[in-house]
Image (tube, rainbow, N blue to C red; front, top):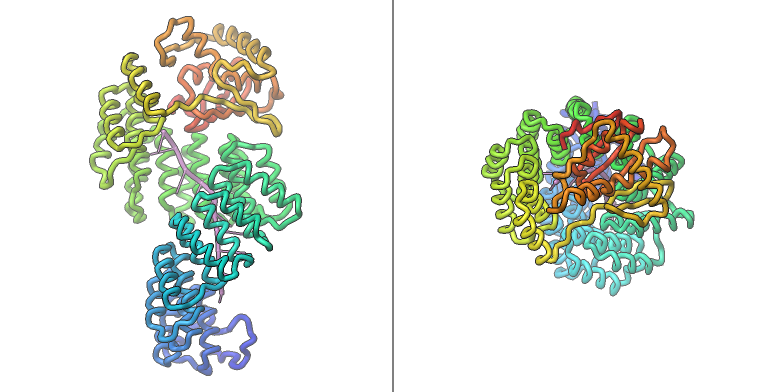
Length: 610
DNA sequence: GCGAGCCGGC
């Protein structure tokens, strides 16, 4: 039995029809409320809010039968309904069929395309609207700006921004915030800041947009400064703001600052947001505190896909492989549908544990979930097979790729070649990389190192010369340690640190102990043709060793020493650090450009496979 | 009727 609607009570905010537990047949056969456009609009609003698709479709048919679709408000409601139920092409159909198109009708269809990842259509309709003589308003500008940002169409965005200025919308906080966001997405951060500074009224969205803009461009300092200013001025911050600044801390491995911001989150009760949560998981993981990542993950019961992915990648980076597989199973049992990032995470986990069969399994599973493997997934498979020494299987994967192999795919093969000293295949891969045109510095280094590892120093030199001729510079190897709010950075053989003498004395002293425990330096990792004494010296003071020695003389014995490095740790340092952990009884956590190594009692968490 | 985000191997 259908409950009658409160017919003339148009003030009511939440219409009671149709309730979601209404019998289907009731909806199919009878709409027994008074048919005026206000009631119909209310029903549509309710359906849009609850995103109840089948009933919405039936109701749409009913609207057509009764002729109410001719009213602009109703077509506007219908467009919004299809927009929210992610059927933008149905929105378009309703729009095209509407005889009367008001400014709201245009607004809803332009916003619908922007929200459903169809920025080109959004801009096409924006242009059509201008051609029809409509002026954009405070609803239309933000949608158009969003579309420009998605396409990185800076120049078009700029002209829309000019139009907003000319039509007097520059003071509007919605328009202003969307312009800031647009410039930030187009990587024009200075313009974003100029607009931000010129806004007469700003709100939490404007502030978050600006902070997020800095974050996305890696301008950590700008983001942190602005965040501090917002706190200082006692402005509103919210979960958007927090997830941005926490991301900054994660990217720059600023654990202490990140912890302080985490406390602030707890105080302001934003800690249950899974957007903040995934940033926190990533923060703790990137800073080497996997326990912290687990804790955040466990404490947020309402997890979205981003949280699961963040936790998966954390497990992968810290070599908690079984846990990663468990998480994937849990996701399936929670009916959380994995996306392409999820598969990158599990493939990465397999690759770093050398689990070829498991990797193949997940790669096949992608098909079942209907996810087309991208170049990154192929690169991951090549990496997995290559590292495991199955170079020919890796080549087979490349040959079978339906898309053109990219630099990262060949790069993964080069990595495999380096580990398994297959110079011939390395050269073949390097040639393919050169054919692609633009070559990044890491590639030349991989090639040069492949030659050097095989003892072909002349060719290695040639590869390095190629690097120099192309104006590509190898990144300087740096290691750093955080102490309070300070970061101490070291290069190889560095003597600039104030405690330098103490650091070198510590290394000397430790070196003796290590040798007595059986450590022998493996100089084959020095990739230059120099005398053996010089090799010994070069390898002894690699940046990570200096950073660890600093940690040893600075931190209390129970505190793990966390060192970050921008390049891959060399084999000899890896061995040496195992001895260091054994001789000192300390836990040493080293993150290189690739993964975490947790050294304890003379063993490393990576199981020497990295 | 409106604006913004998390997670991503080499």
